[in-house]
Amino acid sequence: MKIGILGGTGRMGCGLADSYARRGHEVFLGSRSPDQARAVALGIEGEVRGGSLLETARDSDLLVVAVPFEVAEELIRSLADLLTDKIVVDITNPFGAITPGRIAAVEVHANAVPSAHWVAAYKTTFWKTLGQPADSAGVTRDVLVCSDDRPAGQTVMDLIASTGFRPIDCGSLENARAVDLMVPLMLELDERYQCECASGWKFLAAH
Image (cartoon, rainbow, N blue to C red; front, side, top):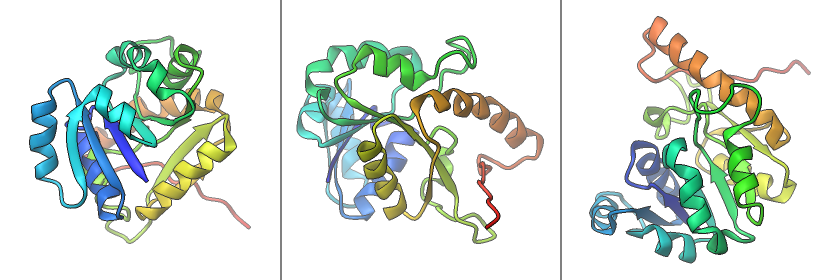
């Protein structure tokens, strides 16, 4: 699969690129600075190349939005024609930029470019753990996934599973409102218990 990361030179973008490339995927890093993207790509093992945001959106089968929430909507609107019918994974967190609990970050972006197949994922995943799908106790980390498009959601869950994490189907995009609210609490708990960006949410179910 050809995976493009919009904002691929950031910490989350680089971590995801490394994770995907190690599983044999072709990865494109997109940046406002194509030269920087190309330089970063050289430091990641596997089939990884860098370029512009437009090139990345055009040449990828699946895209990850890894830019800050504050600039994401403007970016995806500028690339709207290239996102049509593509799976777009939204990992952005609003951190109070929108009314908490009223609408999810991914809903804002899905409303802006409804022609794409939107999936929310990695919201509660720290960049430092992207290369560590299991914690120090050997427990596999969960990645919460929300989507209104079941085939798109399943594709993303399969991708997540291929990297060693456990995808958790959390239902519709509307449920991402709750996931967005889990992130500030996660950060507070991480600081309170000095987890050094290693904490996460775990779904437990009795059978």
